[in-house]
Length: 374
Figure (cartoon, rainbow, N blue to C red):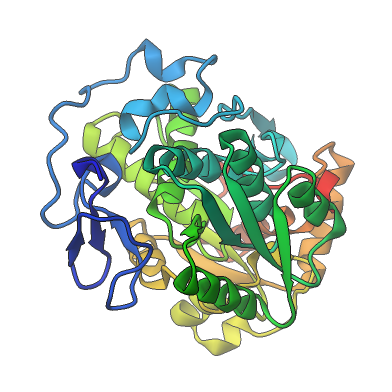
């Protein structure tokens, strides 16, 4: 394996020069060097990177791969993803980044493009993933583009449109009874007992390198200024952590002067980050419509909490009723998104009510998934 793809444990600092999906201590791994992990202990420096942005960073023909110098792998697998629109949302006094216009209808294509490019570089023949739908559809689609067989472990309750998106590109959905955690457990068993490569949006560090491009694009679209705050849905933290790493990279390179506050929006009843910050009562309730973030034990919980602390961020839990109202408000204004996506604009309203976000704060909210798959 190329030395640039060496891995370092997020908990015990052990390093690996051969690809593996998890540290022996059980914690997730990150790349040992490179921009996204520039402040990891023992990381290589990034002296070869530009000290200021230039025209190639806004190459609309390259999409997210216009930031290739900040990614761990070349563009082996692409469907033209990236550079999603940034539009005004006056009803929310914010800007929305339309992540639902990706090839498979969700921001997960950012991570899938980089993850499957890495899989192709490593010579992977068969990949597996576990997902409530969007990540599975993205991994399945980009695996098809790469000519890699894929199996996607999903809940039996997965939305039919998301299952079809997996099947129609030639991947095999593996339905699992039980909770979202049961789905992950079944997939991990398959990884450990076979020869499949784990293309996990939660565990694989390449996926987070891909979602970091959200921050790169956003700042490029804003003439290299960061907003005051970014509000994202928060389950496993795929976009939340990717955005954090991306903003941190740009700050460390000197391309932006500060980090935005990162504010998470969780589903009531599935809100371990809100509970860790504010107590169990803050996470109580029920929210079954935001199915994309029904994660009770996020793999990178400690990293999410550290990102919140560093950015003076927060996380709150929203009940189903608030998300349903938020979805209706989005539809009425032309944003055709899936229910999970509505949790972040709804959270922005609550953050303002609580005084966490000031009336004059400059806020960006990603709209993460298309209503065409609901």
